[in-house]
Length: 517
View 1 (spheres, rainbow, N blue to C red):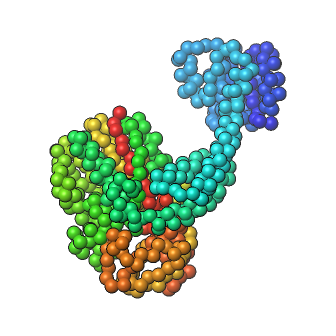
View 2: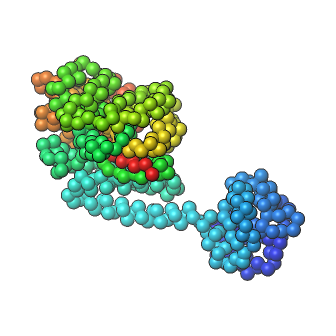
View 3: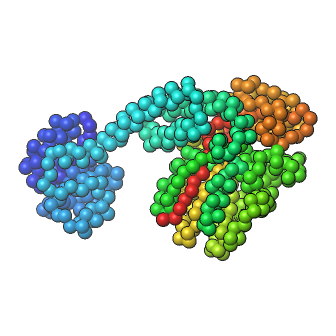
């Protein structure tokens, strides 16, 4: 049977042909001629749907609906009535009616309404499964051809959207297939980056993807030079799939255009975000800001020059925002609420730069907390937590407020993250960096299958840390562990979200341009 239906109508005998039609289509139909009998049947039996006449002697349809909902609030109901008054329709909707049909109804109308409620999930799932398998083959075949950076962006966008879609259809059992395909893509993506990344660093910006140092110049400066007021938001560690999860919350306030940029290597805050705010590559930053990476391990210290970097960037571009600008970094909700409270004092500025660390902090804290590992167990739950945070956040409030004052929003991320699975043993001395997705130090080595081995940092526009210093940047979902206490740290970091390596999730990032409606 496709579903159990209770049909309640005081003239149910006149609807025998309709009932028989539904039965012939595989539905189990029980009938009742009054509201009291209907409520009694619902209290004793399980139904998937109620068809309910609005005008009945004794207990009318709306009263019957209310009593049925008292028994089972989730039971779908379709109201059938001769009355087309808007007020009645509103009462029915307020009473949590699922659908509404006006008499006279024919058997096909009833069938469509029932299928829409009872079989929508199944029909939708079948179409989704079919469409994904077609796309699965298309993407798999594409991996055997030459793929450029725009095509890689398109592939990753499609995979991210499928991941979100499968959250709504867990019974399809296609998540594992999707994750295996994402890994296959990341293997090929790693090869692509290894082959092309150095070429991008010396190429004209028209012949490479937008990279971290290009973001402000290409996405913010044109708006400022056009006398637009701009709020530039960098959400540290925000992934594309997380943006896609909460994007719809902003549809009522902004017209949204999605572009992309690629994080530089390593895809970690001290490199990618410093590069973004300075418009420079890391080796150029090292020369201009002496000591920025010397003896520091924490990312906050390594990014302490961001405001000065913007000042210097504007000077090099011989540009200054017309009505001034401000830079704000938010490390916790208390600072966020303070910023929300003083946002009106910033409305006269032409440019506000806002750095938000919540998503990155969540990833780091999850690595250290069993409770957070339980709550944020995988990519799907990570997305949901980020959406819930954004929906309730001071940041969403600020973005909504600024839509009323003509601000354009440019929202992006400095890098993404990936859930690491496979450990790699690596030797290093005291000077080796502690990061588990990338390393710099003396005479580091690793299999090229697991990491990009950078023996000459200058070729990759990376800071030089002394004689025999080189970098390792992990690929796919590998992470580095020292031999000392290997098993302890292997299990500690496995299945955590990390960044700094080469994967679509870490490198391909949204650049969202929002224009107020």
